[in-house]
Length: 171
Image (tube, rainbow, N blue to C red; front, top):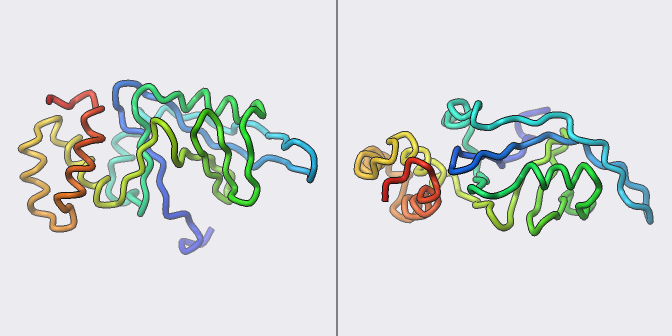
């Protein structure tokens, strides 16, 4: 797929209190007037294993979805696979358990919005990565962020709100 056609969204689960999984799925087979037939998940990944890769700056997009602890993404994906989610063909989105999952042209399903999902801007996500990299040392993270004018005070505050759910938060 050409670079300009790629989505500017990243779905990421940071290792907060509980780790879920993100899966890739095939687009449902839909016939007008009939329920969609979902082809099933093609993979499940434990995102804890991918954390160092996920924190790489090259993977930060304009909008980044962070999954908070206790959010059962695996159940949502199972519900999607079992046909218990509502498919919106116009928006290319599944709605299940109060959350919305988008589908990329490749068929990858990723969490987008809803309870337990936090959308962060590029700057907010960058600030969140600094808090995580500092191992919960807020002063150390803030000192590192002071050298980056892109990480505004507002972005740092939003990131800190999300970071408070992280296992290394010491507040």
